[in-house]
Image (tube, rainbow, N blue to C red; front, side, top):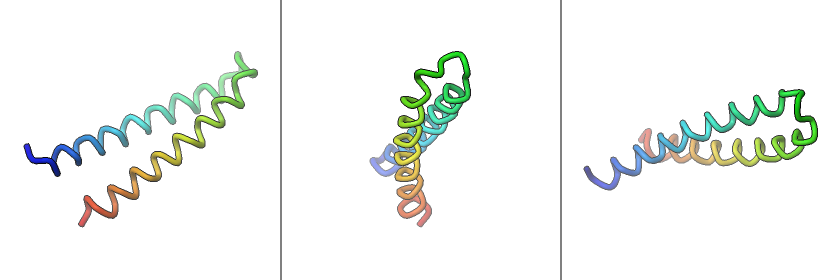
Length: 65
């Protein structure tokens, strides 16, 4: 397997992992059992969404050409 293929596979796996993490984070935010942790998860969500946006930009700019 060449390096470009490895990079593509890792990038797509990273995207899928971030999407899963974002979904879990949203579930924690909407969980009313632990209101004290809501701010932590909101801040985490912002960070994960920024990372996902970066990964999506890389995929769009470099892998779809």
